[in-house]
Length: 219
Image (cartoon, rainbow, N blue to C red):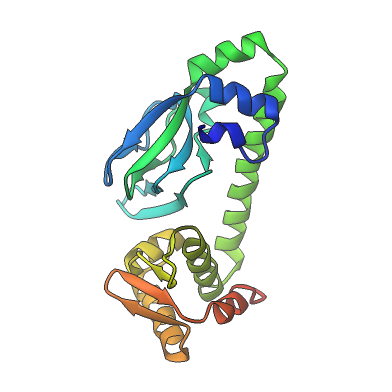
């Protein structure tokens, strides 16, 4: 059963429709699904594995918008305008996806126009997430933002002992910060006994302390 059958926030009717017209896609680790600027012609659901969503500035600076895992859905905006992809998506590990092509979905809407309201709700969830991310980037200091991201990644992709296979550079790319700034925060956390950093990895040793840091009032 693919992920569209249990799509979070979607009606049973929409989930069933998407599952019926979906097709499987498999990616090897390091393989790119699509690049920023490619035609937006499908919506995807992650069944297994891990994907990175990133953009490049005009100067070539990379910003990681999100890391996706099982149960996540992406590509919704392309369903409405068929415009180019606004980000690059590549697999950090072997990944299985379910894909619904835009042309097939438009045919489905032609048979059941009421599905359009459900799709708008799905896109609304994505826009709300974007708005929250922008608010955090503008008003929340680096240390609480980094704590939130580390806890989120550890919950979704961490090992049982709290180890997270993300480097300081990759964490900086998630936050739009410099590696040096992230390194200073991680150094302070290490001194307090909250984490144990290693090359290309870190282990959370005091999740409660990080959770308190994550809840720090940005004002």
